Image (cartoon, rainbow, N blue to C red; front, side, top):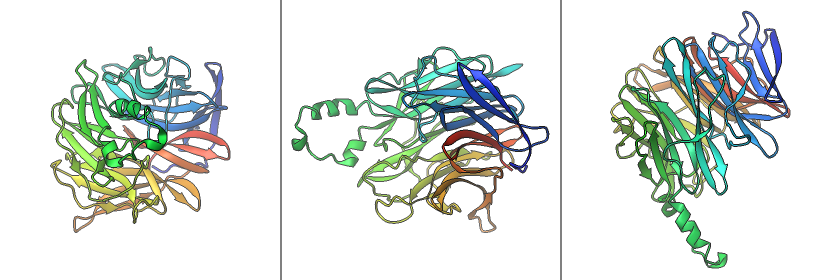
Length: 426
């Protein structure tokens, strides 16, 4: 299905919570991207989720000193969307970023629109919280914001991901720094000039990946030594739950780790190194991995890493696959045209693997996509996918699969205006 920006559109301006909100709906027969956003705010950090023809898109809408989380829904496969609804019950109680957007879980209900569960990050004093809210009316309204189970602790946490297992229970994976609080407090008692220089590998051992099910059970500490501000990805497929994150290996090598759970995330396997990239960098790239599981149970990981050299900031993207959760195929490069990052990946019903990312071309960040194909010799190849109707700069894509096919949402900036674009992928 081709997507084109050349068709006429109808622009609807509505008033939502005292602010003008933009909603652009493609006209009859049109295939142009749909535009979502709030007038007068910076619209960014989108997440798209779908269940059949029910599609939801969330994003942050920020002013100079305040940020809120909004969500719009579609019941016609993403052709049109409802006016946006604020999710956070306390105004300004959201802190999102490109690697730390909100996450959405859609729980099926017989004869009704899905229950919408959304999780996001917020700051409270010196602490960062993970919050959740639920909608029982198809995203029209949301209940009071509450803490994600197990995330109530001092320190910083976030960079989370979310899934729903085979039993219908949502769960969240996140990076947690509660163990660093006592160490930081002790260092504050030492004059700055006398403080020992922190070893990045030792420091990372205080950062953990946590997992929490929304069923009242205690949270699980999955692994220590986590790169402290790269996104995680959590996916459920069949009876298994899969997790990936950026790990800090000895020598401050920041490569991708993978773990699997066969009991709904109550316990996970020991982390497996996806690829021995040996990317040595004293810092966090703020750019984590993506994960999808195909219909045959193979887990596909896509991640950014340095193109060459120690500490380089020029990133490229790679793919590797595992069938047994213990060993991965050699990494294969994606067809990037410039410094690339922020990958997303979904498994399509027909068996394809769709990857989206952003890359810098002639000084401007732009959206790129490709589908995985296997060549005659078994090596993976990637076929670029062209998404028409884009303009300006595009960044931070998000992917989902609806009944009509794969869909993408991304941030689009034209001059000083930022909006969220939503389109079906051809």
